[in-house]
Amino acid sequence: MQVVMDIISYIVDLGSYIFVPMLMCLIGMLFGLKFSKAVKAGATVGIGLVGVSIVSTLTSNSLGPVINEMVDVLNLNLTAIDVGGSPAAAVGFGGLIGATLIVIIVVVNIIMVALKLTNTVNVDIYNFWYFAITAGFVNLVTGNFWLGILAGVTHAILGLKVADVMAHRTQQIIGIEAIAIPHGFAAASAPLFLLLDKIYDHIPFLAHKKIEDDYQENEKKGIGHYIGAIFGERIYLGLIMGMFFGIVAGYDFKGIADVTIKTAALMELFPTVVKMMVNGLIPISNQAKKFFTKHFADRELYIGLDSAVSIGHPVTIAVGFLMIPVFMLLAAILPGNTTLPLGEVPFAAFYVCFATIVHRANKRRTIVSSLIFIPIVLWVSSWAAPMFTQLAADAGMELVAEGMQATTMALGNLFILIPTLLAEIPVVGAIVLVVVDIVAIFGGKYLEKYYAKEDAAFEETIGIESL
Image (tube, rainbow, N blue to C red):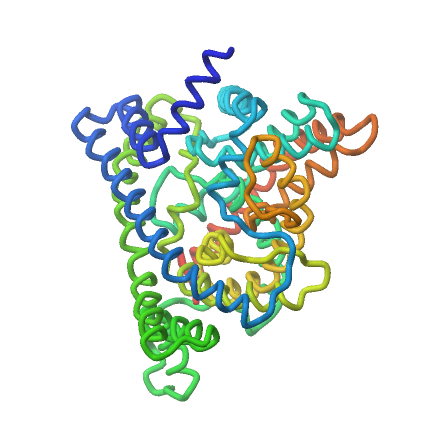
C-alpha cells in the first residue's frame, strides 16, 4: 500500500501540466487513437494548461496588488485569509488520508461505471484534493479515519452524478463531445443553480431568447442596446473593470492605465489558452465516443474533466470579471463573514462557470445566480477556516501569520459542508452518508432522464444557447 501511495504522491507532485498530458495521451491510445495523434493531443492539452498557468500567474500578478490595495481602501478587517487554491491542494494531499482517498475513489468510479451507476470516468485526478479536504475535515472533527474516507467518497459520488445529469448540456455549451464536469467545486454549485433556473422560468426579465433575436433589433438602438454591446465585448469590459480597480485602489495615471490594459488582455487571453486545451481534448473525446459506441453499444460514457474547459466561454469570462468587485464588497458588509478574499479573487470566473452551463449561457440568469451564490461561498469558507487552518498545521504548513486563520473561497463548497455536517451526527453519521450516496446514485438516474427531455424540448424551441 505504501508503494502505491508513494507512486501517487510522485505523480501528483509532477504538476498538472505534466501528468495530465501524459494521462490524456494514455487515455487516447487506450481508446484506439494512433500514437502520433495521441501524443499531439496530449501535448496540446499540456500546452493549453501551461497557457492557463501563465495567464493565471499574470492574473495573480496583475490583479493581486490592486486587490490588496482595494482591501486597504475598503478597510476589510477580516481574520480568515483566502490563501488560494494551490495551497489548499497541497494541504489536501499533505496527509495519508488524501493519498489513500485517491486510490479508493478511482476504484469506486470503476465499479460504478461497470455497474452502470455512472456514465462519467473522472480523470481529473489533481482536483481530487477537494475530496481529500472533505475527508480531512471529517477525520479532524470525528477522529475517525474511515468515516473521513466515506465522506470524501460521498463528495466524489455527488460530483459524478451532477456530471451525469449535466453532461449533455455541458457538451452543448462548451462544444466538446463525450465530456462531463465532476469537478469538486463546480459540480457542487450546480444544485443551487438548477433550483434557481426553475425559478427564473417564471420571471419574464430572465426569459431565454434565441441568439438570432439579438441581431434582428436593428432599429432598436437605445442606450440599453449600447450598454449591452459594451459589456458584451470582452475587451471593453476588461478596460472598464481594470479602470475601476485602479481608481478604487487609488493608483496614479500610470498605475490605472497599467491595470486597465492588463485586465483587458486577461479577458482576451483566457479564452485563447483554454481553446488550446480544448483543441487537444477534441480528438480524444471523439475517439472516446467511437470506442464507447463500438464496445458499449448501450452506453454513453463521458470523460470527467476539470472545470477549466468551461472558462473560455464569453459569458463565464464576462460575469467572472464582474464578480471580482462583488466579492470584495460583500466580504466587507456580509454579516457572519470572516473570509478576506485574496488568493482566489482574480479567478472569480471559476466560481460562476457552472452557472453558464446550467443557464445555457443566459447572461442575465448567470449574473443573478452569481450574486446569490457568492455570499454562500463566503459563509461556507468562513465556516471552513478553523478546520482548514488545523489541517494545514498538521501537514506542517503555516499559511498565515499567528492569530489569523487560513481558508480559501474554494472551500465555500456545499459538497464539503454537507458531508462534514452529516458525518458529525452521533452514532448514525456513517449510515446517513451511505443513504446520501444511494439517493444520489438512483435519484441521479431519474434526473438524467428528466433533464434529457427538458434539453431536447429547449433545443427544439430556443436552440443550444440563449441570451
